[in-house]
Length: 355
Image (cartoon, rainbow, N blue to C red; front, top):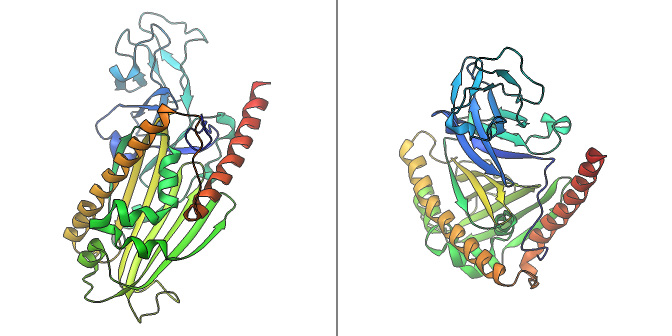
């Protein structure tokens, strides 16, 4: 497979496993890196992630029930705690040490369930990305969603780190004029954990979503700030102010503001779970504005999904064929360089763990 098309999994990292509210209905089955996992809350409300396979006869634990002692298998009643230990076998006092299932470190923070797929001893919670906006409903009312996408997860990172596609793919919503995007003034740099860019489109007409949300009547100074935090997260702050309000000097003024969290969690080599959250920073006291924002953005991400799935289908026909880079790939290339470093570090960690 080409480096661009299919990326190996990086296991020693935190990934979004689910939004917190996804566990409101009980057990949640989710495949991550080809591994079937059951996510749930125990009787105390503590989230856990276990291999979705009972050690007794291989039945999926998602067919089970949460009981006081833990997760009870729906086939013969073996019960497991969030560490994967079997704590009860009906009709049997002694529990053999091999009666356990694999467990995954899971941490709940900012209405997000984060999972660590690598060596549990390396699961450093300080590495989890802070996203406080989910807990600031007065300043940043938000909506969340998740799409399954049939493509390698790095195609989403590529998509987000090269915004020249907006004027073509999202012309009717957040896009705007394609020429404006190509000519945007852009500052790009490598970071300790990924890549960053900010791009400015000054004295331009606002795209339809901006005009509707921000109630703009004239031209705006528009920015898009993106940070890739490897291996799978992109943080976004986009917005616009009326021309003449000094947006480049200070963006923290009343205007049109969006904050988005993007998470691309690998399901398989050619599919991923796309978690996205969008927060309204312009008419925060208007619930309809937040819903309108969500309704505007939702179809744009469906457009991205369609493009990426079509990309992957073509790549699958000739996986060894190289992809050509262009000038617009500057931030994308830095993200890929960062990913290559993470892959090497992860391989070294896995080799040490295997010794």
